[in-house]
Every structure is written in structure tokens, then in C-alpha cells.
Length: 344
Image 1 (cartoon, one colour):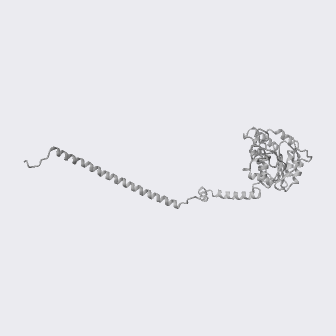
Image 2 (image 1 turned 45 degrees about the vertical axis):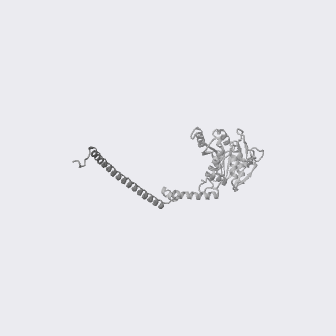
Image 3 (image 1 turned 90 degrees about the vertical axis):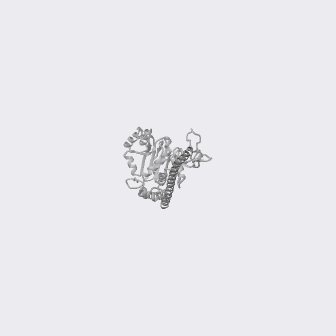
């Protein structure tokens, strides 16, 4: 009995506890392997998907044009007809600029005899000048049937006015009512009638008049001028056929640089060190031939205006082949006996 090996209770408990501990470890290791295999599989699958997607995008990018042409865009937008009209308009504009006018855009209003009008005379007026207008109608400016007969001779006369800043107010309504009675207004719908907007009025007048009437000359007259109408008609009649004519009492003078003084010019610095205006026709009355009026119409959006309408028009004439005609008969303040105008 003494020779047989014996095992103590403590050794049996240790062996049993070690056996119990190793089983959960094996289970955990097994599940860890499964988790690792699952993650590795997903990563491999994601990498494969990314590679496939990248190749697909690259292939589509190679097949697709890098930059859409204008024609493609127009086709997508369904603007083929618009493209055609734009091309036609550009061709017409190019032709118009080369010939000095817009082709097929003039509304020719001629005398009853079918002849081209001699002149369109625009008399500037304002909302508070009804008394002056009645004075003109009773003196040098015909009215009613006499005005119609003058148009048969080839001369159109209209009072020129814009619209009120508050469209449709009593000022506008009064002018509309007066025009229904007298029918002697040219209302510039796009122009705001205000003192500070006066330089822009010339653009609107010549641009509108040349679209409505087909005439040899377009005459601007201030509202403080007494006109010798027959003398002006005779002068213009002898000037027929002179293209590029810019006629008036030509002058120049110092540019007023002090703000607050009369005739102040905000853009004085543009006139050089001498601060002197270029040669231009005095504002009281001046004449433009048809093609010069058409030039203003075509380029009205880009023509620069200065503080005064006469210097503005003079600056426009410097950019074209205008023929300056300095005629002292247009100097309304002179003592010349055969002048066609005088100051009220």
C-alpha cells in the first residue's frame, strides 16, 4: 500500500479548473477567427467594388465628351430656332453698321406725295410749359389743319417730352389729354422727363424720330427759341443731299469745374489740362442729317452723356465722319439779320 502513488485533493482541483478554463478560450479563439475572416472578406469585397466602380467611371468619362459644344447645348435646350434667329440678327446688325442704319427697321412716314420728308423738328418742352406751347402755336408753329398741310410739304413739327417719374400720374395724364386735342406731341415713352435727365433726352429724341419718320434732317429746338420757320425750311432745302451734316452755331469754351456753379461739368477731368470743351453746336438749335441720327439710334446704349445735351451730342459727332457746318444763322443770340432763330 505504501508503494502506490497517491493524488492529493488540491492537485485534483487544479487539474479540473485548468480543463474548465481552456474550453472557453478555444471557443473565443474560434469566434475571433470567424470574425477576422468576415471582416477580411468584407474589406476584400469593398476593395473589389471600388475597383469595379472606378473602372466603370473612367470608361464612361472616356466615352463622354469632355466639353459640350455650343451646338450640343442648344440641342439640349431646344434652342435651334433661337440660334438661327441670333445669327440672322447678327448679320443684319453687321450690315446695318456698314451702311449706317438698321436694315428694315425704319417705319417710313412720308408726305402724301410719296416724297421723302425734308425735316423733323423736335421742340423740347416740359410738364410746366403749357403756356409756352400755346405761345408757339399762336406764333411760328402751325396747328390743326395748318400743321397737317406743313407735313404735306415735308416738314413735321412735334413738341418732345418724356414721361413722369411716377408713371401715369396727373402730369402724364395732362400731356396725354393735351395731345389728344392738338396731336402735336412726340412722347418719349422710355425717357424720364427731369432736368437732370436732359442730356439723355437727345438720344431718345433722335433715336425715336429716325424710327418713325424718314427725313433728310432732324432738328432739335429749345423751348425758349422763336423760330423763323420759313427761313429754316429754305436753308435746309438748299442743304439737301449732304450726308453726315452736323449744322449749328459752333462754339467751344471753358469747362466749369467748381461744383455748385452754373454749367458745372462732373466729368471735367476728362477734358485735359486745358479744361476746354471740344467744338460743338450750341444747344438752342442744331441739325443732324439722317445717317447721323441713325448712328445715335444704333449706338444709343453705349453713347456717353455729359452734363449738357449740346456737349453730349458734340462728343458723339467726334467719333464719326461728321461734316461740321458752322452757320451763324443758327446763332440765336447774334444780331445777324438773316438768322433763323431768336431767343424769347
